[in-house]
Length: 165
Image: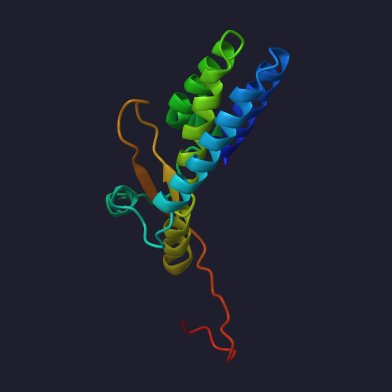
C-alpha cells in the first residue's frame, strides 16, 4: 500500500511539474511508462504462490512464548527506508526535472503490483496455526526476521456447519 501511495504522490508531482512547464509530451510518455509498469507489475505479481524469499522468512521465524514489543512505526521506517528515501529524492528532483518522478512512479507501480499477494501466505499460516507473526527489530540493512508468537486460533465454520477444513 505504501508503494502504491508513493507512486500516486510521484505521479501527482510529475503532472504538476509538467503542467507548469506546459510539457504535454512528458505527460504522454510518462502515462505510457506507467501503463507498461502496471503490465510488468501485474505479470510479476500474478502467481498465487508465495515467493521463495517470503517462504524462507516464514520458515525461519523464531518461536516466542510471548508477544514482542510492538512498534509498527519503527518497523515501517526500518524496513521501508529505501522507498521513503527514493520517493523524497525523486519528489524533490521533480522540481528541476519532472522526468525523474515520472520514472520513479513506474518503478513504484511495479513494486506495488509485484508484491501484492505475498501477505496472503502470512495470513493463511496465522489462521491455520493460530499464531501471529511480528517483525523482529534488526538493522535496516540486514534481512528481515520474523518472530512467531502464539495467538488465538481462528475457527472458521464451513458450509456444512463443522469446523473441519
